[in-house]
Image (cartoon, rainbow, N blue to C red; front, side, top):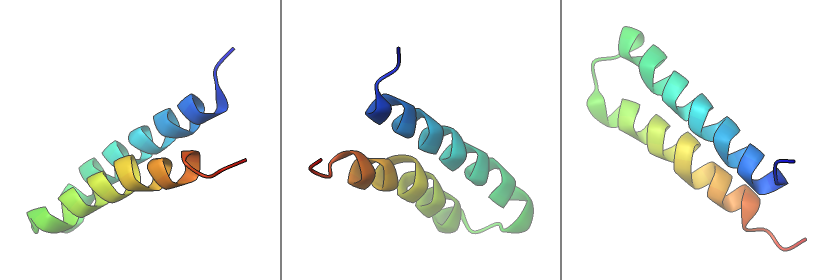
Length: 53
């Protein structure tokens, strides 16, 4: 069985990568694409999984 933190991390990494790819169609600004990738794929799951339960 998957641990809850692992499932959250995998979900947001997939979501971040998807947003990074889709944003390529709408903007040519690379910093926006990287901000989406790092923000959604790394920072958000880190914040969500580091909370004390």
